[in-house]
Image (cartoon, rainbow, N blue to C red; front, side, top):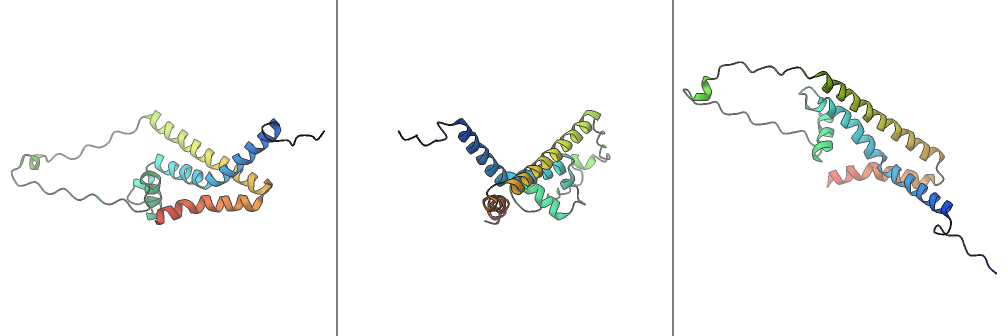
Length: 157
């Protein structure tokens, strides 16, 4: 009698190999976006892109992270001056200073920044392992290039 050909259904080891290969392919494709969001998320945690002195590129990347557009946030129009004698004109008080953030808020920001950097680092390790030790290097490099180019091309539409 002829032996039946082994399929992924009949052999759990083949199924696991297929799942592992799909995991590598999907991970290489989404790796560039995961790096982008983890690094820009770290900047967002400390509100760096919201500062007026932040480089324009950082501001634009933050808008991609938050609003899905590659553009500087439009400036708010100035409020018109109230008419003389208007009730709002009487407010001559200096603006109140913001209270300093609570210690727990500061610690939580640093914790999330460390997590974001950890995600970026493990993503880089995963990409390195896939590209250095993967079996189908051409497919992996194409998936990496497609994963990096797709968001750029979509934003350009």
